[in-house]
Image 1 (tube, rainbow, N blue to C red):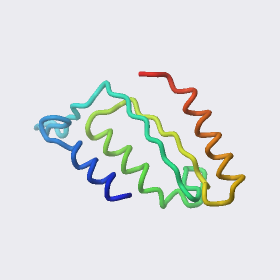
Image 2: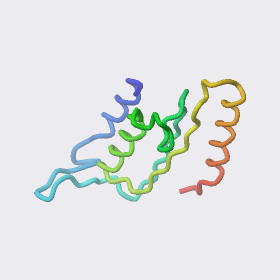
Image 3: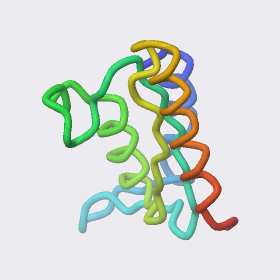
Image 4: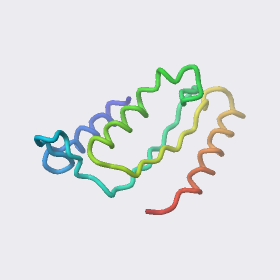
Length: 105
């Protein structure tokens, strides 16, 4: 994960603002927010890929946003963009088509 993204996540993790600890455990305070993660990858790391076990980016982001209480989470990804011009264009077209189906929050 890029250090800039990690720094941004660290800013979002604000005790008392985005989450609280209680006797019942962690309570996310960000509820009712919609988060759309746009992800571009050089290779293939989604669930159907043999490389899925190396997906640390999306799994971390899902865990973090769940931790702070976000329940409406969508991921739009373009995979395989380093595997040639044709694959890159196909991945971008697919991701843009998926974006078009998302409803504005």
